Image (cartoon, rainbow, N blue to C red):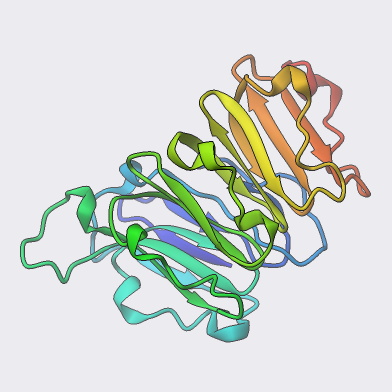
Length: 248
């Protein structure tokens, strides 16, 4: 697990890479626990924490395989967003090596460390600046730029993004073996579909304003405050309480 103490007394927390819950698009809380090994994270939009400060503090604790808790020193006080995967983590950090310090988006970079068995920490050059959001799955990472372009890298079907989604993304979330995004007002999912986690209820495909994915299940919230989940449901994690499903 990793977290950031923000200088304005806000905290940004990424769940432990043991499948505690769901990786939510923007600062959405984790959903239900799941014992299967997988990522868990909470992301916030970089705009909310745009000013770097020596009072910002990035820390990791708990399961520390693959040197996950050995944070590169240059990220400790310059990071504004963190996301933790199974055994790797990524941050959006302010590049203070630039000759002219400014708050332009170009100075916000994506950096990852930890387990790199499938290239999940190898950030493509296109994501070295203008980063808006990052999410981590089990052995993959996805990121979105400020121009709404997104991509994923690592291993598995979850890195095979449908072409149209790459350039029109508004929200994105990652589970253990799948990912979902809202693109052009429509919710689309890709990756492993063993438990139908890629198949949202048709009635909610065009109404999602918040999305979150866990291990083989996915959840969304609509503008009318209704909630729906689908996919792996062994422990009831995809069974939404009646009042939440009805938006009450």
